[in-house]
Image (cartoon, rainbow over all chains, first blue to last red; front, side, top):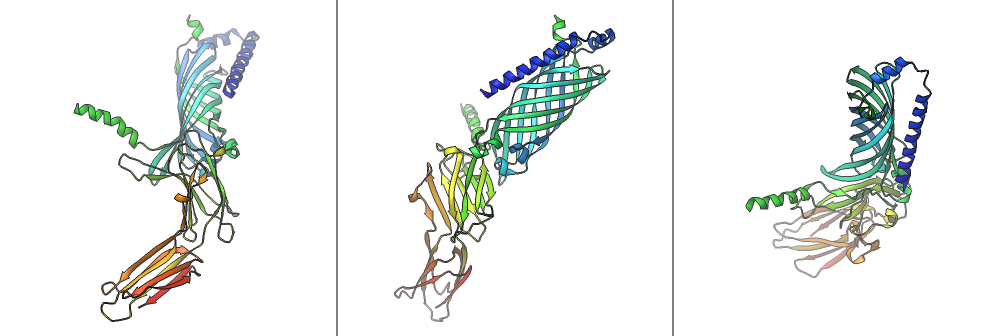
Length: 227
Length: 232
């Protein structure tokens, strides 16, 4: 029930985002023809990106209190259906180490497999730069917790639903290639069952991710323009 | 046919020999308090939550995996956040070094999940331990002299078995008596050894010299290091 409400909220957010930018574009008649041409010239069909990020754990929860981010990577595929609006899918891994087992249970580290669909809008503020805002709309995280007792390994898994907001800044270093910096605020709604007194600690996991990556540009027309 | 049999065995080996995996998306809380025999709280006692699992086809005894660990507070209370395993040998151990007895709570969790995911151990008593050193020395030079002896003393651990949260007294054992003894003769005339037992308990010493009627002596372990010397 909660996840349906969450998806509805995200769809509403996307709709609002779409409306705002459509409205903005309708009333930007003062924009010079040159700028429009410049935008059209820089239009993409899509992109493929890979980034490395440092997850900073946060909040009063089992991850914020008991874990430290070690690193992570994600691979992103982005498609522009209409002008600068995009949809996409990303997947990757986040690596955490346990710093205080009193908050987590007894294990040493966590590898999170995450995958998420996202949507957003990309601004073209200056020549060679792109500024993107996007939101994760449907995704899941699979936490593989790994521990050792007397050098013998054991595993346990936790699962959750991903929600995130991301902002990125691209700098084009070639016709089909850019480097980018990204910040994302990510909140995983966890499915962990815990005693009432501990439940609040296990309801969510919050991260601030700071990433850097490379992006390959594909095509020069949006999807609609292709037909 | 021979090769296909090996192929059938291969997935079985993969399944049996991977690292054990514990209950998904679950945490439990183990809570209670630890006192000594005089009702004083014991701080910094170790509370460990374990499960015992076989790690290979040929491992019948299994290995213990630590699921949760913490220490008691100044007031003796503890609350341990732990992973959970559905297993016939799930146990909680409380110990405080060599100075106190051990306590073990064990239960089968294959079908049992406690109410509100909490294992409430209420009050656990740990007893203070003493070191019992005995030294038996032969002084007589008469050949053929024999001494049969035994000590009756208290075990230092309390092991409680629970079934669906109810104590099973028949399978539990708490500070039970145990006997140690032996026989001394011309070949082995002297013996000394050390055992841990409960402070404040009575030890029963029985001996018989040259198969004469048995003599019984008792004494109380009233010091942390108790020396018992006997000559014959």
